[in-house]
Amino acid sequence: VTCNPNWPEITDELLPNQQASDRPDLVTRVFKLKLKSITHDLFIKGVLGKVIAHVHVIEFQKRGLPHAHILMILAPEDKPRISDDFDELVCAEIPDKQQQLLLYVTV
Image (cartoon, rainbow, N blue to C red; front, side, top):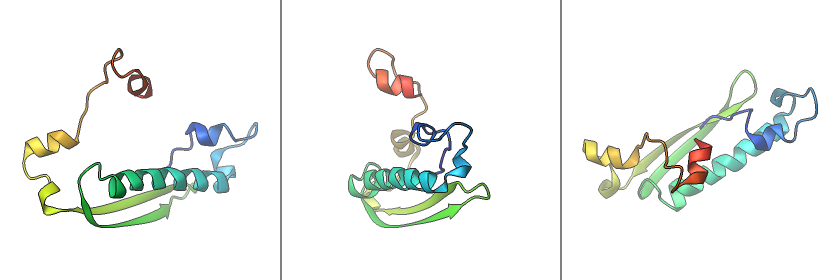
């Protein structure tokens, strides 16, 4: 997970002529909230399956932008084993504008 200085939660709070690198407090707070949301989805909701062990590390790049490395160990019954299992987890298609407008606009 990598912090994006162009996230609206960051850019909306910057003063004129200010950059994200000028506000490490804001950048870090927004990143931490987004990371918390992602880890909740992964570890509590189990969107990729039951997680039996995990660890994550937060690092800061030279420009001050944080990023996280996340390692998860899934329960044996939830580990992808064949290509069809991976196809269920990974999707690279543009959402339908009529059925999923919010996703379509996001992409």
